Length: 117
Image (cartoon, rainbow, N blue to C red; front, side, top):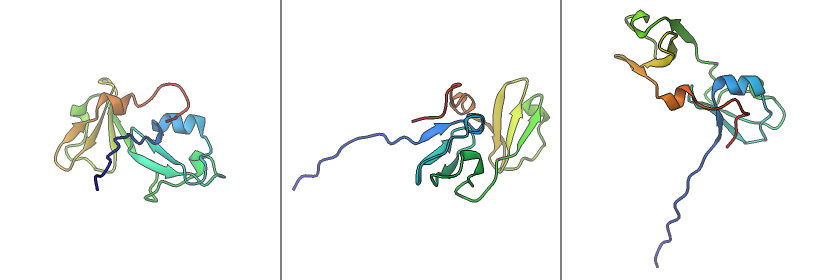
């Protein structure tokens, strides 16, 4: 018997961390909310607003270290933190051996609209 393959794209409700914090929606029970700039996920319970939900790994908001340029970052970074080069208007993350610049999609993760699908 032949198997029918259906190609599809599954998207989560998403936005950058600042958008989620600003709009602070209440996610439906079991509804995922993804932060495109921190790669963190929260699952709604239908009662609590987004800012009051825990991330699924139990962590808290990622710390952001700011400096004028990437050359001003510490020699050795922390993989749990984001690094913002303010003059470059860029975000970086330590990958264990070097700073990796995050893509412009991650940096400009959304518009000034409420996060959505």
